[in-house]
Amino acid sequence: MIEAKVEMLEFQQLGDERGQLVVVEGAKDIPFEIKRIFYIYGTDTGVVRGQHANLRTEFVLINVAGRSKVKVMDGLGNETVFCLNRPHTGIYLPKMTWKEMYDFSEDSVLLCLASEHYDGDEYIRDYNTYQEMVKEQREIK
Ligand code: TYD
Image (cartoon, rainbow, N blue to C red):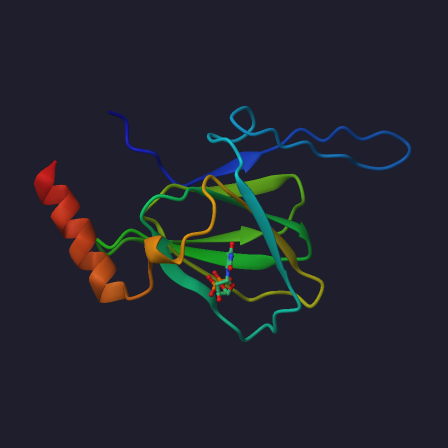
């Protein structure tokens, strides 16, 4: 089995003289069927959101307006920061990715596409617990 990886996705811009249009189709432009969308706006620059990993849900995050940053961590000491600042690019986050969203611009609208319906029980909100679970999963493989 090939393990899913965090990656930036580029979507086609269907622009003409009337402006831009971007299409994101589930299981075509992104690697999963979309079961839920939510969006985050009106978050102050100094606020850090996220700070959790999900047991089952995969996400694609797109700043459809403005800018934010996403720090992803794998529980093994690796972390990468991605800047989301273009409406036609997104970041794919596989399940069990620790994510933190921050540095929101005043006009930021962060669109989140999710592979699962909301279930608070599949959120891991403690980083130490997350690290333990990552270690356990690696030992099982
Ligand atoms: P939270 O997960 O803390 O947001 P973020 O990931 O941006 O830090 O969610 C905030 C609140 O909204 C929390 O009470 C759970 C609720 N919520 C839902 O009910 N459904 C959802 O799809 C999401 C994402 C959150």
